[in-house]
Every structure is written in C-alpha cells, then in structure tokens.
Image (cartoon, rainbow, N blue to C red; front, side, top):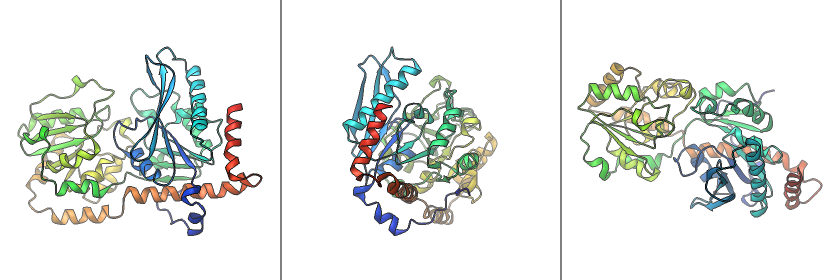
Length: 415
C-alpha cells in the first residue's frame, strides 16, 4: 500500500529518536542546482537546521573558468560545508564532466571521511554521477518543476524518473507539486513553504529605513526575490504607468532575462539583491508587499516562500493567482488575489484605504502559528531517521558500524 501523505505527519516515536543520537546521525550530502550564496531560501533554511546535529555537504553544480580542475570546500558559519567543483572551460563533454564529477565526489568522501551518509537531491542531474554510491537513505526534495524553467536541460524528465526509482522519500515544496508527483513514488510528502517568523517579525518594530530606500515616497509597494522568467514584468509595467503616485520597490538579482526588458518608470526602483538579514528592514518601510508572478509553465507549481515571510512582517499582500497562494492564503482572505491591471489597482486601493488591520493581523498570526521551518525540519528529520533506523540492522549485521561505510566507499571507488 502506498505511504503517501499531504504533509500531516505523526510525531516520531521516542524509541526511534533515541536510537539515532547526535553522534550516530549519518552525514548528509546534498546535490543542488542552486548556489548556497545566491538567495537564502528553502535549501538554506532546511540544511542549516540539519547541520545542527550532523555534518552537511552542499555540492553545487560545476563552475567553469580559466582554472585548474579542483574541488573547493569551505565551512559556513552555520556548519554547512559548501562544495564547489571548479572545472576548466575546455571540459564541456557531458561524458567527461560526469566522469570528473564521479571522481571528485569519491575524493570528497575520502578526504572528509564520509562513512555513513544520506543523499539529498535538489537536482535530478546529479543522478548521472551518484547512482553508483550506496547511501543509507536517499531523499529528493522537489522544490520546483525544474523541467519547466527557462533553459532547462532536456534530460531532466528522464533523470527525475531515475531519481524516483532510487530514493526512499520524496518531499515536495508545495501542495500543487505534491498533487503532480504523488503517483510517481510510494512515499511522497508535501512540505509547503514555511517561515522563520521571528526573523521577519522584526519588520513590525523596525524604525530605520535603509539608505537606498529612505528617499522613496509612500505609498510603497515592494517585491523581493529572484527576477527571472517567472516575474510578471508586464503587470508591473501597466500598474506603474497607471498609478505614477505609487512607488514600486523591487529587490533581488536579475537572472536568465535581459535587464533591459524590465519596465522603466520613474516610480519603479530596482535596488538589487540584499542579504537575508537585511530584508526585514526593507519590508518595514513598505505599505504593500507583492507576489508579482506571471502565470506560465514555470510558475504552475511554485509555492513562494515569500508569502508567509511577507505576512510575518505584518504586511498586506497582493498576489497573482498562483495556485499555492490562492490555496490557502487567498481562500482564507489573508492575501488579495489580482491578475489584471484593474484587479491589482482595486486591491491596492482597498488595502491603502483600510484604517484598521488588527483583525486581519490576528488571523494572519493564528495561521502562521502552525508553521515554521523548525517544525518542517523536525518532520522531515523524523522520516529520514525512520528510514535509517530500518536500514541499519540489515547493513551492519555482519560488521561494526564504523566499517560499513569504508566498505561502501571502497566499493564505489572500484565501480
């Protein structure tokens, strides 16, 4: 029988948790299409918590340049080891890259004495150089439909199917993504975007406006996030043109699109990327927070992390009709939904004219009380520990635990 769930997971029994003490927890080796220092989002929230009680190695995709072939490893202040393969420009053959990545991963295991380990995948592309390893558990945290993104590798759908066949658990970044994946694996679990409420709650009491925002007049309507093919530049252009008395603050890096394609109006202010620690100060100075997502294939399954972050900051939110925002935030009247210029302007006018938001804020806080990245990680960790606990007796019956992994790495080397 299938062991699928929509995200409501019973607490792990104490006997299992006790068996997996901190000293016994296997290392986690993560393979990601995202850079650790790019934007602080789902992988960073989860893996910094993971690193509190075990070693975490975050392996990024290769960086190509005029360099020698090497593996750069650094430990962040959160304890996560960020691993960046550096490859020469001339190495472009997929076969050669796969072979090099296999060897680099093997060497990482030797250099850092990675014995017992869990594989954590964000990108199916990593299957090409990792499927000869033998982790004690494997997880696919499917946070996006990567095959729908601009410039996606044509191999992604097939590699994802290989990944489904090889992992023990599949986590999804939202409910709509869960509904799309739940029939493809026996243990799929929905973990929608969560919140570090105490961090973004600082915006409710912040009094200092950042220098590059201080001179921008009110009302301010703000957005932070990656500005790419998912960003609804057309809607921003139309609303900004019709309401020159409103100012739009846009924060985030511009990737995969031409910056010159973005609308240019005197009331649109592109402030660039900001550190995660700085975001509450910017949010504090906004009158409305925006989820400006175009409705296309690349946004069909997204579950924006910024939805609860905006709400934790106490800011009214307007969003386009992204499914995982409409459900539950729109249906609960916590967020205004608007797709057209007229709908957007009416929603903003409604918010700006609302004198008392106390009842709305009470409902927001009541909703956010039930979600946090700490709770999400605790549930994920319980599922992983259950897999590890089931596997250990079978894997270590014939040898001491400290020898199991050495044998596994040696087997990988000889493959």
